[in-house]
Length: 78
Image 1 (cartoon, rainbow, N blue to C red):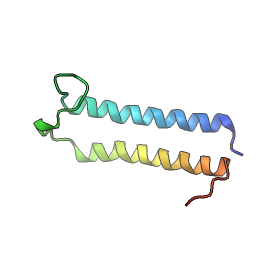
Image 2 (image 1 turned 180 degrees about the vertical axis):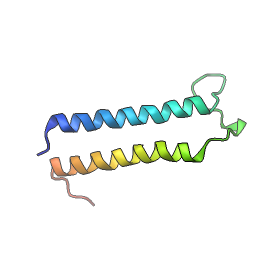
Image 3 (image 1 turned 120 degrees about the horizontal axis):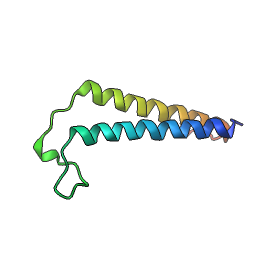
Image 4 (image 1 turned 135 degrees about the horizontal axis):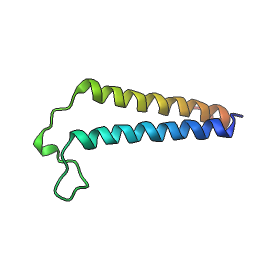
């Protein structure tokens, strides 16, 4: 079984990457007047390369963590 501290570190890394992605969106897309929802009606232009880089890091970390958890808990993939 994987070391608990390794799993915890990978979860923390996932949270950090997710936070960076959300911060990027917060900085790049205006919010509605409520301040909670993105206002896509203004059709902001995002740098596709930056969006992809953030998403790729998030996706990679999620897949990495998934593999660790499958191995640690002997989960059978469907």
